[in-house]
Length: 284
Image (cartoon, rainbow, N blue to C red; front, side, top):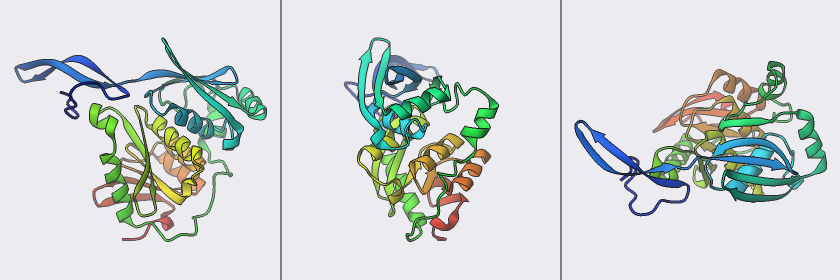
């Protein structure tokens, strides 16, 4: 029996059942636990390995597409021609065919990563690069609030509650994050999970892009803190609002303000804190 939830029998996709000892005081119970899978995933563009990330082996086409868009390897979905996922004894290789112009830009950036779980900065070449490219909001990300009625606080609360209810992999293992896309009423329309919070958001972005869904027709909700990478990915994807269950960092707030993104943190129960662009949220 797993400490997260008592799944019996086989292991759900994305998990492994491993021998374990459960200890409570002097009592020791031998058995097994469901543990989340975490595998190396190589992202290979036109035959060139660009990044190796650690991720959950689920929704990998979504992950590849979302990562490719979020890292600005391509600017538009149509510049991704094909995605092929290959399982190997050493991990997973995702072959991504992109437009020749995008490949040239990728080569020019000269960024090669070997990432920890969802690491957003491994391999950047210098502090100058970070300040110029990674930290400061891109003017192309900045936008005004969509012409829509403000989102009610109840919508944030509904979205976070529904996200918790739909975290199947987390219920089985207690070890993964989730990112969800909700309609303006807070009803959850799409959910992706991963051991890395950045990966979960990449998967969500990829899922929406595959279906040609406009990110700003709803809002994003995540089961993590709002680090600057999460804000950057949300802004680049076109979300108008990012709601996090935990806190942001000061750098994340700075980026959200500059990118025109409404950032809400501590979305728990019937409360939340708004850090930037409050015009998208109703007062009560």
